[in-house]
Image (cartoon, rainbow, N blue to C red; front, side):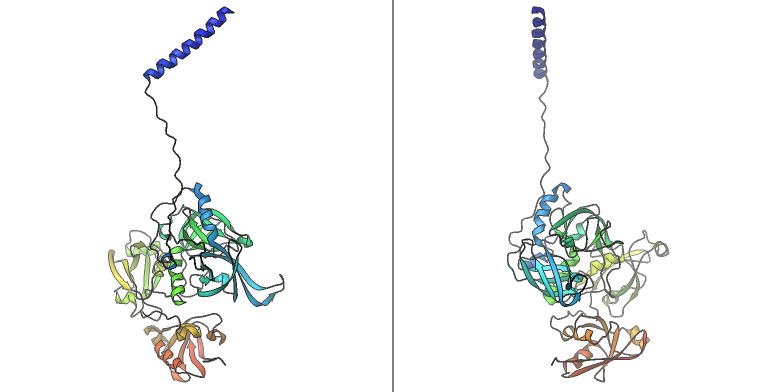
Length: 478
């Protein structure tokens, strides 16, 4: 027993001496425990509505880590609302409810301006907004833009939580994003995904001047999410969730959002003018395919091919020609038609943009002053007579005058529920006479309308339909 104790004590003393000698000769090792830095939020303490839409505060950093979803979700959820519309009629016998729809919206200023999709509110004349804190408000419609499927509504409230516009140009494929909305009337639902692609066109909007350059994500979006927020992990608004591609009617893996930079400009126009001020280059365009790239001697299969240039347009004034290939707008790459359309749609008539293009294998740059659909730099007034009647007009081009052998004013679009819509006129109608007086241009038409006090009779033609057509409406409601 004594021998066992002596062996044990000797072993312990030997171990202690060995460790002491090792520590005496060994240089101490420094151990650093690295912790991930939290998401940094920019603190906007004196933000006002105009600054929110100015785009002056745009991120220049990469997306933060996906482990920060919690902070981003908590930051943006209070600024996303539920929107319900009703028509006050048209009973839906299946559900025993009056006709209407529901979706989401994003508060963009503390005084109650809310952006949503046009298709969320277009079928109703009564709009109800429910905030994240359960308060309900009746909203008024400020303006709509079917060409981007956006709308702006307003509620009478102050001190509301709101989202800051981010820079959608800096969003990168593979970046984590969050979709916030009210699918199936489930309040404040947050889903996560990555950006799958940018500049997507899925051919869901209508009209000659539609703008489809969606951010595609795999964040789950379902009916009711329309008009909700797509945000980066820093809590900044980078898109307005708009559509899904589906065969079942439910989410199947891809969703699409209007880029924030396009939405910001559209909403600013609706707020300032009640309508969108759309600047255009005045060209016909086509994508560059492999065969065309080879014929033109291009280094890569990308860019936008000019098929025609409208006489007197901004592009014509700047010297652009048929056969040129546009590769950038204001130093932002335009590899496809949707990318070009989105970049140009951010500007108003009268704005100047820098266009880089390829001609005969060489790169050139020129500045183009954008014009409107009527081929002038004038802005559409908020209370203009033509807008109040409910249609957009432009002058006929020289080619149209020659082909149709007439002069007149071309009807670009017609506002839902307006006097003009009630006449059953369709877009594409060419007005040649008003009350039997000849119309040569939009200015002629406006002058004659301003002098009209009673019933107005519009006479004209459609390019692809034979014969003359007539539409009448009272200038003043009785």
